[in-house]
Amino acid sequence: MRPPRTFLRPLAVGAPAPVTEIPVKPSRMIHFFDPSNEKMAAKVPDIAAKVDIILGNLEDAIKTEMKEAARQGLVDIAKKTDFGETQLWTRVNSLDSPWVLDDLTTLVTEIGDKLDVIMVPKVEGAQDIHYVDRLLAQLEARAGLDRPILVHAILETAQGMVNVEEIAGASPRMQGLSLGPADLAASRRMKTTRVGGGHPGYLVRTDPVSDDLTEGRTTAQQDLWHYTIARMVDACAAHDILPFYGPFGDIKDVVACEDQFRNAYLLGCVGAWSLHPVQIDIAKKVFSPDPADVAHAKRVVEAMGDGSGAVMIDGKMEDDASCKQCLVMLDLAKALAERDPELAEAYDL
Ligand SMILES: CC(C)(COP(=O)(O)OP(=O)(O)OC[C@H]1O[C@@H](n2cnc3c(N)ncnc32)[C@H](O)[C@@H]1OP(=O)(O)O)[C@@H](O)C(=O)NCCC(=O)NCCSC(=O)C[C@H](O)C(=O)O
Ligand SMILES: [Mg+2]
Image 1 (cartoon, helix red, strand yellow):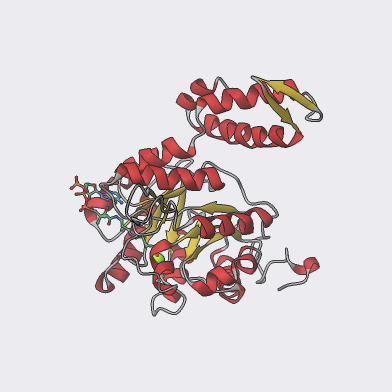
Image 2 (cartoon, rainbow, N blue to C red; image 1 turned 120 degrees about the horizontal axis):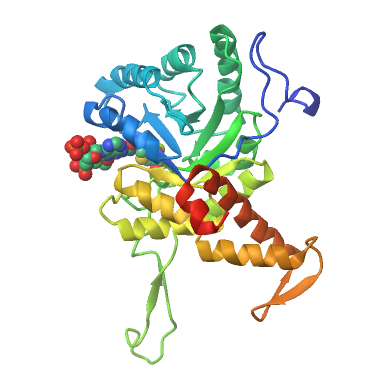
């Protein structure tokens, strides 16, 4: 780790100064598209207008023989598209792959001025972020960029989970973390075959009510990802960066997708990945606070005045701590209202 006094120094001569704060912009969904797929690529301008973040994916889900076409496709799309307020991200290939060096070199040199964040998969420890950090500084200097490109790490190996805190604080470039449940399940040797979501076999059962062990015993499915998401959220909050849930692979099960996204929202995530257009509106709905919650938050904040003391509202005690939660809700609502006139009206902001 770099000592505190040097943490914010550029890592290459001519590289832009690192940021001191991660910009908090609406980030309800990171929409994945395959830049080598002509049909998907053609939809990018329309989709970019609807999402908070659009991500050109170069890693898993891109066939080996299409890796170079995907990289070039992303360069072409980025050059010709006006993304407006929507953030442009990419997911590069993993650091042990034969493609990542060309991914980083080409993208920063050709479209570095348009790229907000580079998502790095399968990050295992601070050393992976340090490698990317220095290389990006060199490339930014070469490309004459005037702002640093931020880095987002996917937590998808057991090693990455063990080192989650050092990853979150490894560089001032660290923008956030996403959970990659499919790779993480494989790395942990979990006995699942899904891309995110729950499993009916992971349950608890009520105690026996008689000698017949099958009589009257109900079960409830449990959340496979609770521990992982909570751990990621704590690491992100401690380092002032942003946590995201990752993919939900059962595209047709829009109900369970909404549940998974909501669990992540309630635990502190700011957004989730959308893999298919049908998941965009699910993320938008879930990660935008409910207007009733925003109205309640406003009442509490108004009643609490300077934020200290305790008041009763609708029979419930509110104090400094619940007021702080309400401020989190209101800050998010205000940020979203600035971007979305419908939400501004719904929140009366
Ligand atoms: C999942 C898909 C392969 C499904 O594609 P398809 O079979 O074409 O679906 P549809 O026929 O329903 O598509 C309808 C139209 O919508 C377009 N489409 C589909 N997906 C997208 C998209 N993401 N962006 C833009 N447009 C999209 C189709 O082209 C159809 O168009 P048209 O024919 O003109 O009507 C596909 O959705 C897909 O590939 N999605 C992205 C998958 C992906 O990125 N996977 C990687 C992320 S998950 C992961 O890596 C795991 C993680 O790392 C971990 O470890 O957990
Ligand atoms: Mg993965």
